[in-house]
Image (tube, helix red, strand yellow):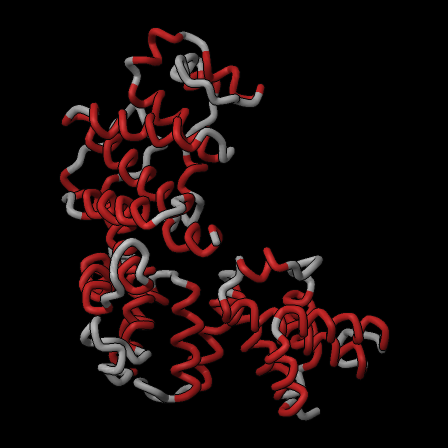
Length: 375
């Protein structure tokens, strides 16, 4: 269950897991010894260099924050990590506001990522709100702590995360109006200084039916594809790969925007260049339809080879669209192997293996393709 929460709440402006952003240089580590004094938690030998100079570390908030991030990255001593992050947040001075916001955001991520009860999720939302309400542009950077995320980036990420919490009901009741308000704050009218994740999800919100009254699940709005296209296009121009795929599909269908096959292909190719999985499947199918089998088979093989084995853990850590795209890739690659299409030599045994792999990803996709795919 942790995989979706990591994805939802570990969004960072640099698209990396937040906890891996702390520096690991020995110069920083030298002051960290015995920040753990009094803790009975067992730590691996790799963290022993972080436990020298007890007296300095006890008063060194930045050292505490760094050690907490090191421990969190190795998924050890969660209680100790929470204790240190709370201490940093509670004791940071006005000149250390950036450090305080980093500690609050990290603690919020930890509670969402590893919280095992509703109380932890509610506290995670409260911490995100504490960060989201800051005017990040007014917070001065800490020169001696260059690895901290800038306050404004944290504010945007927190605002996005709160919107996602209201959208999916993590720590709060589902409320799509609240989600829209928080995402709108983070989106900055589609500008480059806004959150492209928020811009994308605003597009997604307008492209689907959504609840008006949280207490009435049948009270739904109709999709507004023109509004969705506007947000998708803004997010795509700001580098969001999911939005590139979404606007490509609207260009293909003509929903909310003038139909254009050229624009569809342009954005699909950009999404593929940015590693978007479902875009690879859409582009693969396009090439297959127009009989460019070499290009189609290359994309199919890339999708089909992404995971050596299709375990339950693998499937749980994939979004539905991505899992279906992998299934389609396996199926189309199997067809290429069976028929000798593109760069594939005929290989019946390998074809059978990839048909089976496609079904492991999503049996429904396989059943649909068996009925609809025409060669």
